[in-house]
Image 1 (cartoon, rainbow, N blue to C red):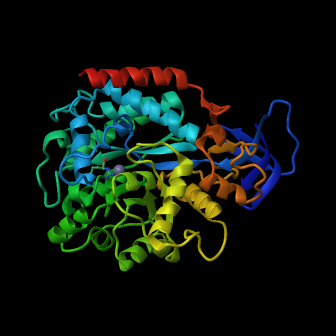
Image 2 (image 1 turned 90 degrees about the horizontal axis):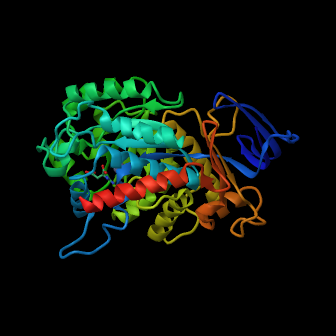
Length: 451
Ligand code: NGQ
Ligand code: ZN
């Protein structure tokens, strides 16, 4: 039971809100209530966000890719470093890194994560005895830290547009559709042992890494689960796909795939006005990863066009170079201001940018993860976040101003408590498993450095 001085409900801000949970879901929400003797008292209660796009292992690359080498540095040269990093990574290290990043995510305010999981095999490409060994490691990390997991096993068959063969580090990713079906089956088996808020979907990695026939064959495997795909992140991808398929990636998907509200196109950075409008109208949730998109030099998302067409979106931490929920929101808005030379861009009509960003990301993120969450409302998973309004970054702000303070002024440390499907994992700003998880993480990184 939680008692909040203030809370953001679907109807707006309310005072003295008592929230009860049952089986991980919100059982009742009562405004103008009275605290029970055993209630956890918090300051301001918000629906916690979903982190809709993560490659957990990349956390351990943070700070290792920021040196300019001779020649032009780009997304594509970063990718080479990432492939080399995978020459060594063991299942134990994968699990330790994932647990670390899931602790950090929850401390930052994310109650759930969409793990876009594409490292499946041993270095060199041989399958593990259990084809879903590394999926099981991701699930173990989620179970250990209590984060809500939407696991997205990735179909990655080709090394580049036009059915190029896989090479080097990519060999760890490879499955044809039949191998992918077996992998998914094994992953679903592992998921049976997980908390009941766990979701399994599928993720064709990108149009570059699959082909039209394979995509058509793989999509039914998603069942009712979410479908995530990287799309139009870099101009070169748009050029390569256009040359191969005769249409830009988003244009091709809209014409050839059943894109709807179960879909989460990741990045969708380089779109024409028609693509922007068409994709927004499809109901798909744009999976925006502002910190990574800045770090990798992808470019800014067309926020005004997306919002004008009624598009939904959520945020993800993707490369995990930095884990900060508030910074994802502010980087998203700042990317727009820097491009448009304007202020307060991401809000339809007039109003608070912080409130629009926060509420949109709460609802859109939950939708993208196939997760009943995104609001403080009866029946939804209790994905909840408490922040301390006594913090100087938030002090004296009222109503939606508080969300503006959160998005533009606050450090991550304003988060005091976090519940993932009712699991109270962050208390007094610290994840309960932090110490143990940090120890294992340090060992994993030391092992990687030594190998
Ligand atoms: C990924 N990351 O899957 O980790 C990709 C790089 C690729 C981003 N797209 C690999 N940010 O796209 O080929
Ligand atoms: Zn990604």
